[in-house]
Image (cartoon, rainbow, N blue to C red; front, top):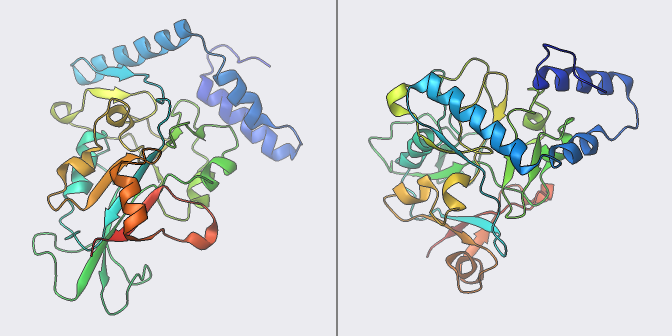
Length: 293
């Protein structure tokens, strides 16, 4: 099977996926393409990165680095959020936008902070992300930030027909934007609403673009692909906190290595009242909520 001259790899993938779905065959095309994706040599990857950096330099008029850092050995990232401290200021939400080159017009938010009524408890049916963040916390309310839960059993990965999304050894579920065909199967499979589709060309002001990027994370995305939180992969694989953790004024956000017995995440799991969202679905999130008291 070869790609016709003048046909981009992504268009080719779209055509192949459409044929596979229409034929309803037993061909495991996901494994077929994933296997070949991993056959890329070091030289191939370097060439792809060079092309991307050249494209971004021409688009934004500045040097943009595209990293390819791999998962570290002995690391499984996890997140914990103290609901007793979160005041709903949404600084995490906007720090995430700036750090991860999310579109400003139309706005794309990987984090949504939901305001909930204390009398109703955790109630997504009546929660709202649309509230005045200048007057928080509001009496009688509490706040539940929601983003990608980095599931151990991610339904989004299972539904992708072309293998454009997968789980890395450090627990981060990533998306290859060049392989994504925009079918949005992963969006319908995600029970947390954590995936977002670019209906139009993302707009990032040239003076606001973050030039420190990762090929599977915050590099500028094209129209027609799905994107989501990657635990700031370009930062965390360098030993830094995600931007949302760093900016939180109340210290309600925790992040670290789940495999470190002396780490903060393990302390939270072993000493606090911890729960995960929609546990009945067996997605097994690495994103934990707890009450610090």
